[in-house]
Image: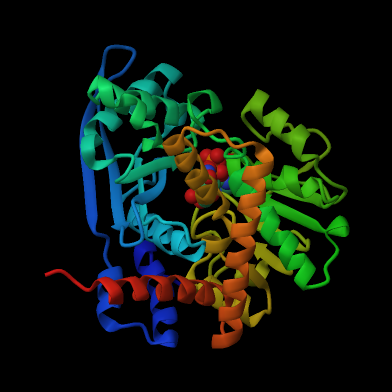
Length: 420
Ligand code: NAD
């Protein structure tokens, strides 16, 4: 079956289903079906060998009615306007579901960072920040890490942005970006936050379903920030990681793969190839792995109408944004596979980004206990809202989550009205 290749249209289809069910105000529906601003920058960078290369970068700001635009930056060859629009919209829904005062945005540069040296990456990042100029800002639009970007990249963005400000304003602008290294104004717990959130929500699902995590098996697609932290934290429950796939291939061992040892191996070798005590498998048999839980934590559109029938799990906990297409969703629902949808399941990252932003504004440092405690409280409240919405509207959890977000946004539009 062929599905719509436009990610943004897929998001809008998901939202329309929720909007129909709850009877969303048609004017609010129209407003939310488009991003507010789309910034595209083409910028030259002098690469280490003296060559000048042109790059294309995006920052798409979907909605800011609930607060400043917020969302990650991705460095990947597949970054394009359609993908960034979809990712920006997901941020609007996510921040509304967890009820933090942000809107939604996303950005990125279309290139393969693995082909460039660290020095080149720094130049590309700094030149992109310069090209974006005042399209980002600490009270306006606040980027964070996403695929192939990390705390180091955020530190370069911070430094470049601050260098562009008048000297007397620099100390007041550290919250222009989150996911920074701790010494540069980052927060305790931010690096693991998305994986931590995934695992808090799996714990809650297990409690609700009388499911024993200490005997659970699970597999993970993507072993970067989100995938590796989810796996390391699942290990603390005694759950067994039975298969992993990343951009370099897939491995499986029904007796268990140690997440910490695998992370150390990947850090050293940069590839899953040659990892001892595991069998290499192809993509199709990876997806067919028999386990209790699947955590997709790589890219979008991985679970589709063509392969959703192959999955042998009870729960899918979406660490990635948009890993399931509408066609895939329908099959999972028919098969009774439960789902913690991305807009809830991976919201831990933006919640701790919000904590980092607050700490920078207040010049405070919170300890890990405080960060984790507040994260847990916010995610459990959001889980409760989505669960209640699923019961009230007798619908799947993704649609229920969108209804929570749409109601929050609809109230605000109703109160504020449309100018002029
Ligand atoms: P990352 O760059 O740290 O890791 C990405 C992982 O995906 C890597 O292991 C990579 O090898 C793997 N991958 C790439 N292409 C693949 C393919 N074709 N098949 C299998 N694996 C592949 O990125 P991340 O920050 O962990 O983000 C992963 C997902 O989580 C993305 O969808 C991102 O939008 C989402 N997310 C990230 C955060 C965050 O805080 N970093 C927050 C919310 C959601």
